[in-house]
Amino acid sequence: MSKVFFAPPDAIEGALPRLLEAAGFLALLTHRRRLGIKLHFGEDGNHNHLKPAYVRSAVETVACRVTDCVLIETTTLYRGSRARAASHVALAHRHGFTLANVMAPIQILDGEHGEDFYEVPVNLRHVARARLGRRLKFIPQLLNMAHFKGHFVTGFGGVLKNLAMGLAAKGGKLEMHSLSKPVVDEEKCLSCGDCVEYCPHQAIDFIREVARIGRSCTGCASCIAVCRSGAISIKWNEAAEILGMKIVEYAYAVLQHRIALHLNFVLRVTPNCDCMGTTEEPLMPDVGVFASLDPVACEQAAWDRVQPALGRVYPHLAPEQQIAYAEQLGLGSRQYEVIQVG
Image (cartoon, rainbow, N blue to C red):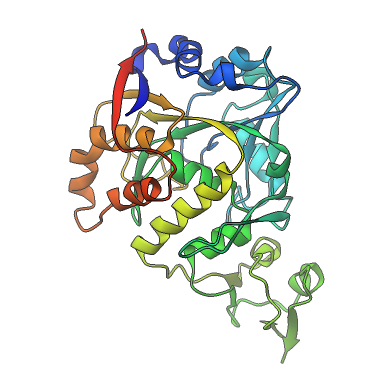
């Protein structure tokens, strides 16, 4: 049975150092090795993201035990402020995640447009080789700080999704979300040539003055970010159950040969994820934060507390299948005990 440590909402900031210590994470950290703190900086117009003060508390706690720590993220598959590295960092700074506030810099792991990745062979049911942000390769230790909330396709998003979707390069996100490669809307195409010039695989050409994506496309999806008119997009057509399983398989890839502590912040639980461009009202009172070296137990503990609320919003979904599949892959156990940290 896995141990899951808990702190109530009114004590989180002060309790974070004790949570990291009680979970055994600090003892596992290796000196002279980098720590990546994975979190979601919030979408433009959405302020339900974690407080920068929580991140600073974590940074101060680990500072003397690692060479340095960085806040890590990747570019988004959809268009917007987070689709490119520079504008993603600028948005994070506007939301309070500045060096002065959190004592750690930000690193977007998959390059300016999401084109930089490395592959991790997993050979699982749906994913053969996971495409992760290239710079993740040099980060052997992770602090996974997830805002637990609802999701209209998978039912919820917690520590597993924070790792999988959050650390996959654009091509990895495309693989999870879609059954096909990017497509071009002929009416929106400006024939500017940006995608043709930028494509790292020379997979795009013009046919009758409209961009066409050919068979040599590898699905890296960087063309989506460089298209100035929004003419290139993906088909969001993966089934909910399969998307959930792909998320778990990508989380499996991320966790290979890494030390990680997982924290689910069950605060301001909203129907949709933090990628939405509006600040939704919470469905239920704040619960607190769950922390564990076991991501499956951490996810199950959080889900058990929010299931009544999110189950009413998404009665047609079966979110627990994600957790069951993660246990099946050996990522952890759904059996847990909660230990409160003062």
